[in-house]
Length: 156
Image 1 (cartoon, rainbow, N blue to C red):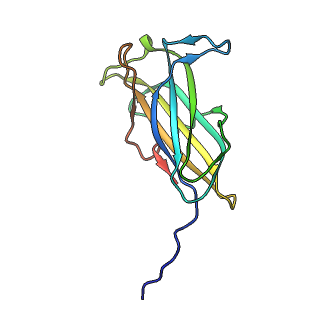
Image 2 (cartoon, rainbow, N blue to C red):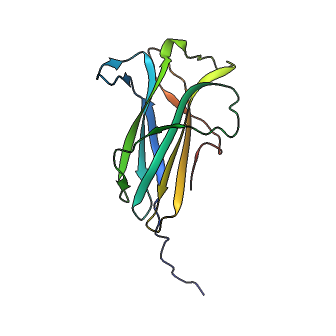
Image 3 (spheres, rainbow, N blue to C red):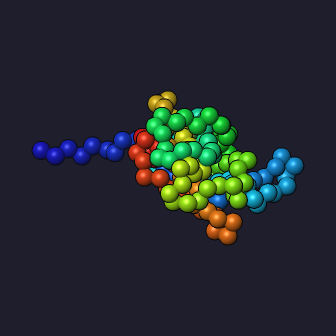
């Protein structure tokens, strides 16, 4: 006998895209030579998400990527509450110059962006979404490429 249970009422934050974003100084000056990122995310769940905090790291790291890296830099969310079906974005900065980033596919180190969005549902249950990208850009073509690694790319 089949039962018609209603779907679980919970938020689910997913990463929509990660794009190059120039470094913006506190003075408002824009530095197009430094690596930055704009991360766009959405709540695809069925209830509102409360963003607790967002951590990230943009650093040159050895390849293959080590296990257990926790991003310690924190960026405040633009909106603390994300309703079902809506999204938001964060802008992340680094002091890494684009011309200094190693771009070779066989390089022993690459620039990685590792991030975690911590959020809670209406019952206070803490959840998180992780994301990881590797810099694949050049001064002419500036891109972040998804990393296929379930330790850093997940949503639960």
